[in-house]
Amino acid sequence: MRFSEFKKYIKRGAFVCTGKLLINLEDLKIYHPEKNKRIILVKDLRNYKKDGIWQIYPIATSKRQIHIVCPYCGEIHSHGRAEGTRLPHCNYDKPDYNIIFTE
Ligand SMILES: [Zn+2]
Image (cartoon, rainbow, N blue to C red; front, top):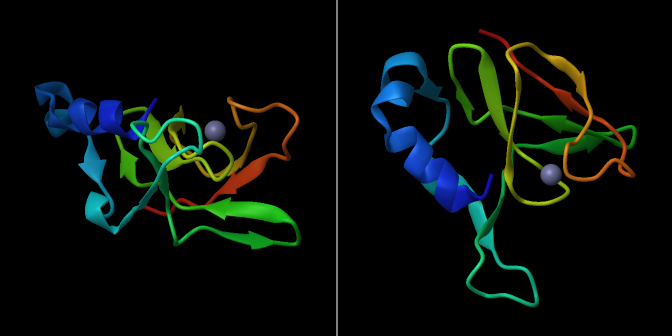
C-alpha cells in the first residue's frame, strides 16, 4: 500500500488495538516518482544491504503481520509476523529481502 494509505490505516481503531508503531513515521525519508510528484514514496534509512541482500526492519507490527518499507518500490508491504526471507510482492524479478524482527 502507499504511504498515505498506511497512515490512514494506522489511525483506524482496529490498528490502535492490535498494532504498534516501531518508529516515528516522520523519520522515513519521503520522495516522489519522477513522473508523478503527487505520489509519496518512502525510504527507511535503517535498512541496509548485506552481501547484496536487503536487511529490512519493520516499521509496525499488528496481530498477525509486520509492515515494512519496501526498498524496491517505496511502498509499505505487509508480511506474516516473523523474521526471515521474503519475496517482495511488487517485483518478482528482484532478490528476496530479509526481515529482521525481534520482539
Ligand atoms: Zn515493493
